[in-house]
Image (cartoon, rainbow, N blue to C red):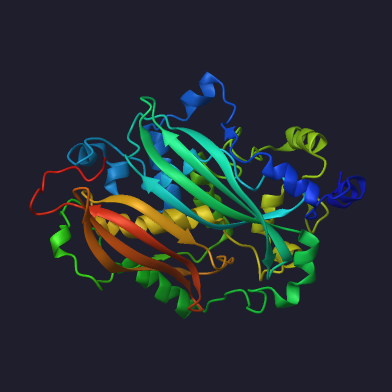
Length: 405
């Protein structure tokens, strides 16, 4: 069944109605846990291969994730997953939770870490819808904001981390109608001359090395200090498939039984469309696809959302930010909290520069904390990501302390 037929056959489909909002609000505070059998839970164990796949998807070749002998000599004593892997505790999000037929856009998140995810861990999550609000929207006139809290635990029941996410839901037809005034529609897709691509290639080669095993002491950090930048992109179809698949974890298509359950093909996807007739959207060739596929098409994104072209998923930029920060903090530093906003999307073809600056230092409950503001900027100089981070560093007064809980 096409989206148009579903819209015609179901009152209120794809629109903001009082009934749909009330139905969503009824889920506030209800514990949400992925329905998984024991073998599925066991398959989520962080093995050597899983850690490496996640690191590859992030473009982060830190030996803490790749080299077991190196990792054994680190403060962790074993391989660890990239910190952005904590995002995988998510149990449910706005892409599939309520408001059928409406598009979901990622507004921002806060990640908190209490302990690292290490080799052999199984991480289990519990999620809760916490907020539902109807708000004005520049993109579609009005939107529904949905927000979630999720808690992640290891097999011992120890709290590893917490995730807060904020999403907005938009009527696709309204987004189409505002195409001419959408916040990014006036810009063009990026294009590069051979000389410009050569400059980007050279920038990748000449980036500052990661800190690694050399301890960055809290006392040596100065407020106003700038972090060595990192470069990502230009965003392409291949980079999206690898980077947003999450190494098979956390991607929209990468994990059957995950928050989306959209990783189906052939006969299975037709069965899914029969179960959820309002789900598919017709692409430019008339083929029904799951809504997340709009990310991949320049024409489709312009038509459906009023964006300049295909665009990224926000979770990818979580991993990019982590890469910037862990390279600076070194093996002995520990990310404690990261808050991210996504004022714009990364459009197909964009190159992205990651930058950070130390804004404060403090000691709290015996932990030596550095606060950092960081941004991601595209080739036009537009800020596509903005955030703040707390990093725990070691102090010269106690260089053998552990930076995490």
